[in-house]
Image (cartoon, rainbow, N blue to C red; front, side, top):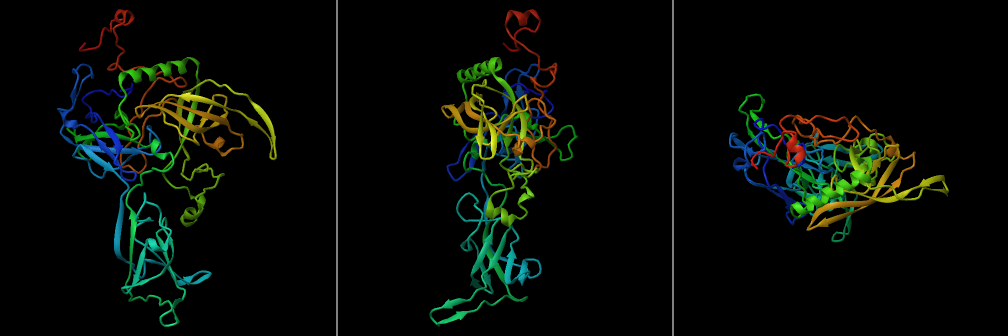
Length: 466
């Protein structure tokens, strides 16, 4: 485990060991497996070096997912603690058969829409409406739903899946058998109107484009609180003490490749450039810059000048900033003449380690204030495990909306945090030694140890149990 994941023993249960996330080979479903946390007992118990949950009454395991990266925000995906060693995270699409539409609350327009007379539009109880197949694709076809009036199916003109609105087709239909038009018969207060449709219950797993590479999970152990300090009677592993796992990693790194990553990090520390990175949000609270959910579903494009989402469509726009070190600059700065005026063209290729996991349309901020967009990311892997990321960065003009993204109050490495949809108090952040922030003293229960003559001369000695 990395530095910062070694808490004081005895204050909360340890997280499950050997957590693994892998594809379920069905749509975007992900299977998670772990060892029983009640049987956890590793290493000698000396100054917090050993791990044991024998003193805890284990209830189960909570599963948290982040669609933005390994540092969050995280949202709990299980309703109650999982009492097995397996959990499948999936896009939960549910079918509702013959839902009765109430005459007073279920109808938006009953033939009296402003500037659109004769429009009959209803709204279902559950939202959003999705297609039967696919990864919860929003419904947009009249064939995605089935509406009946007094047991007789009626045609549908329009379906707005995100808003869960269905507009009936009131045009006359030509009947070739009788050679006459069949007029639309509107329902009355005593009519029984039913709708059959599919809707999304819970969150949708992202698997389009490169979004699956940003999905991470953390597992925490839930136990009975013996101290009586929790209002729920339960105590849980703080989120930052659980190691993130990704469904994109096919295997676990062995010590050889861990050493390769460490040496690459040393090279960056010697000659790299320290910058801050902002990661584009993939999920969250939808921005109201589109004004209408129906319009958003149609246009798919938020406003580029919106100061709430910064053109991303999600409130806040970006997560961060996070401190990273990139390869040294190596490119020419060129001023060119364009139809819109002169602009600076400056692009070159850099590389970083395996974390944080970046993707196209993220951006970095240099210490001189310049901001650069991140291009396509080339991920170097060994046996399906990420080792290094290389990509091209390009200078952003000062009029770009991304210059209005605030730097915030964060300094250093931002720890994993919970999202607003999770009813739980966020745990304390990780305290790390950063280049841009103040140096934080190491707590007494996590002292530096080693076998070198310099360390032994200081009186620390070799680690316990060796």
